Length: 534
Ligand SMILES: Cc1cc2nc3c(=O)[nH]c(=O)nc-3n(C[C@H](O)[C@H](O)[C@H](O)COP(=O)(O)OP(=O)(O)OC[C@H]3O[C@@H](n4cnc5c(N)ncnc54)[C@H](O)[C@@H]3O)c2cc1C
Ligand SMILES: *[C@@H]1O[C@H](CO)[C@@H](O)[C@H](O)[C@H]1NC(C)=O
Ligand SMILES: *[C@@H]1O[C@H](CO)[C@@H](O)[C@H](O)[C@H]1NC(C)=O
Image (tube, rainbow, N blue to C red; front, side, top):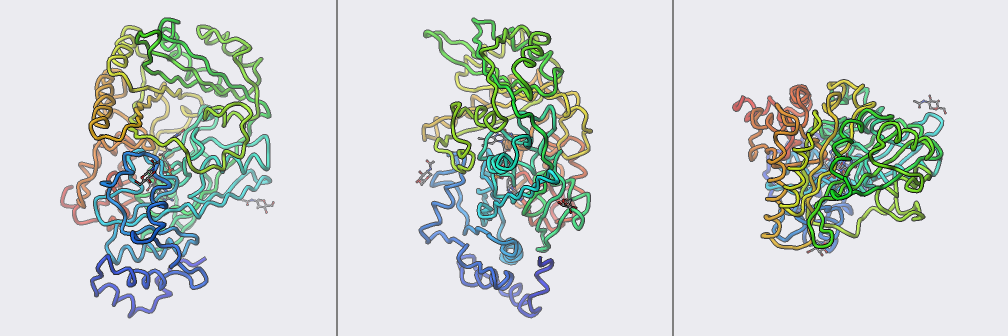
């Protein structure tokens, strides 16, 4: 593999490119630059899409997962590059640097605030979808996956080779591993196995100088940073090597709903005392939404579970630890682990596993998400207040995801993801809608922000913590082209707590000039503006 591609280029050419200012619209000059740096055996010219080409819009739109950023007023990239070889990534970085273009790296496009494909500065989208090979090494119980693959593809390729292996990652099969793994990555096996980042063995990244590095050559600091610190502050992640985990041949799932009238409020209250302390093979998520029943407003709590074992053993665990839910045998469904993946994404039982290879969802919506951590159970009275507020607002749902188990055994500084022991559960706030109107959007954004404000007394404090993969620009953004430590630390400490400072150190050492930047990128203390605001 090429390492420093710049050495392939005659030095005088390098100089000319720097000295002659290039207008962005001069696509030929940019193409020349790209060809200069790519390997001739892997031509790049077919992989670049300018706005005047017919494929530009379909390619841009195909990985937009939030319709808020699919409008004609959303800033569009100067062009899109779809690398199919690592030298294309190297060339993109070196040429964008020269032309002073920002790079937005997109793998699965699930960023909730669209930061992988929207910028206010002139920018290029590096779309990774052609790089999505998954190579399973069952003997070693490992797998190499390229960034553009989805977690559904990872699950599928494991299942093809083995019915007793799996991987702890997200519930939504279309999430891309490029963003998902570099931001943490959790799913319904996290209480047994931790996060995706807790099961990563190696990675390949192209850095700001166009060098292709692996774990050994990037060093432990950078390898630490990209496992939860967000990859896009440090370089372009090409691929990950992950450790497969063992799953039983048969697992059990259930889905039980209770409204307030059916005692749902008390059961949720009780859930807070057991969900993080039970058997680590049991993950019970609660989705709480305002609904109407017989014309009356109420709140519905949906308990979704995965148990890594038989229905018989699950009923045992439940009757001992959580009898309040009243789970009975015919609510439990035994199935293979791969079918549980489909069940959890609401596919009807019996759906073909092939659906995991489907990279697009047909039901895109306008949406906003936020997150919080709960460290002390919320009292019944306070929960009642929350239900009332939810009914009053009308549309926002809360999802409670239990922690504990393996999550509490891993130190807060082991990876940049700091939300470990001491957290009972994480809350995800969700609001989604289908109407295309700014007024409607503002109304729903207002609702979710109001509920978030209302929750202040009940959630983690100093800092009020958030999950990076639940991207939320309301927490704060870097100033325009002026990345300062102080403003970044406001959102940075929420996502990373004290790991933020180490991330800043790694950033300063690996990308001092702050080429890899976006609204919530880690600031470099070496970049001019960074020093000024210190
Ligand atoms: C429907 C849905 C369900 C979800 N479910 C879960 C869940 O169950 N568990 C969970 O933990 N999260 C979940 N998420 C959140 C998800 O993990 C994050 O949005 C994640 O960052 C998505 O990764 P992506 O590659 O699809 O996104 P992208 O939008 O492509 O990227 C997200 C961020 O990572 C950067 N990035 C992407 N690829 C690379 C790369 N190759 N190198 C460097 N930087 C890169 C981007 O620039 C951007 O900053 C969900 C999101 C959605 C929309
Ligand atoms: C996104 O916008 C484009 C162009 O307006 C449109 O063709 C496409 O259908 C939109 N995507 C979705 C999922 O609505
Ligand atoms: C993987 O397995 C092969 C043999 O199957 C072995 O040579 C190799 O050392 C193993 N380990 C790794 C890390 O690849």
